[in-house]
Image (cartoon, rainbow, N blue to C red; front, side, top):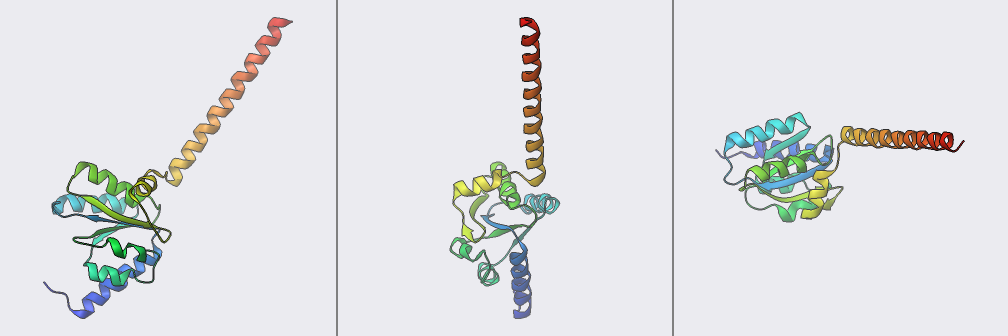
Length: 165
């Protein structure tokens, strides 16, 4: 079913609004992936603050104009499935990366973060970036290990001192 001009304007303004609020954007080619799998991907994305949609390339190009994701215009080709990370910049990249491991037809085509087009290695780094909660857990673990190390060192020093006296 063809879209009329008003429907297209609504889509462009909706995507533009999301683009202005998002932290990062990732695009993929979803050709050959069944709808049920994409719906499961969307459901898991909603749980972690990732907004996803399939948009016509011309509408997407218009929607990202004058946003930090305008650098992705070069990567918009074929069937474009987009994901915007709203809470954590790496959420969309991590989600797409995990999904592409299970579905070989799903190919990540590009990503943008802070107005910069990312390479494949940078996309991998973005996906591996810990969330706030994961970073706090790592920090607490490191502090716990440092405190335990100091305690062992102190107890060892006390033991040596008692043995020498």
